[in-house]
Image (tube, rainbow, N blue to C red; front, side, top):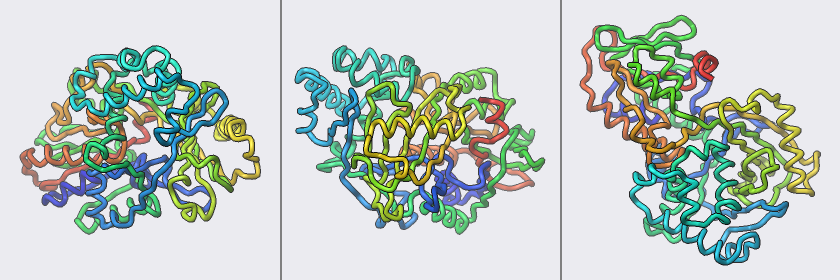
Length: 448
């Protein structure tokens, strides 16, 4: 949507195709017991300048609410608060030396500006060297497994650096503290506003359009074939689905391009949204160290968002980051609900079954590209060998972690690149850019 926005404002004619019924992809909203909110958890930081600039353009930034939140750790069957320096020093599971080394690691990462050397060293090796074996085993390894599963063993140190760098960006820019923010109405409100803005700018939006094939036309442009049998031709086409799906969607890519795209490893997610009558513990994020818990974190959104947004109830996300082939994707909603709620009640003994008002599961097999060793060197460029065809997706976030701010930044960068591409004259549709449908359903079924 940001890419369409930038291109349209630069005078291009843009058509945006989306395979789903609604716009937004991973940022889309859904309904939970009459409450419309984000399908996955998102937070905005004061330092998220790219997203905030977009919100200014949409006349929404002034409505943002900024809150100081608390952070929890669940370890050894106990819930700890680690929301300030004093609580960090009192954290019992680590010795004083361990705490000093952990703090020094985070400080060192926050001061590192050149991420490229970190791509050449494994995250385990780097963290063990800085924090020591005990801290790595007790803290870092469980946190890495929570996000990457066993794929953490293939990740470079740039992965953890990107996470720390984002959290400390406000401090580097001179702000005394980092605040977490949200837009009343959630991303559903932003997406509705964004869609209206795009239409006012002349962007044609067509949802429910699953792309099946992108191929060159022979005249310098490209043609998209859709599941419903329709065909559309454009001077330039940008595919925004996952890299393996893009490789399958465009068979005219070179063998080297297809191999590189197919080789990119992803982490998927199974994320449960749980609506509760009451709050849990008041931590926005509770990091889970104990391995028996079937989800990888507790995100208590109502510790950030005013509960009036949820009619006085509490909204909790229970994410589980897994490999795209993990059997969890094949479990029914009922199986996941039983497993997740049983563990949640074990963590919070006061939580009763009657407190659970709604439970809904989202499954996405490809969410987070894993930044392996020398990741940016092995990444295919956004402009492909096929004339008029480009691929822009989250794999091109090479010096950051996946979040909405980085995605907007990527779109801004891609727009600058595309606008330098000479417009190809055509009698079909002059100066038209097509954005191929994200997560085309037919492609996903074959690629997964």
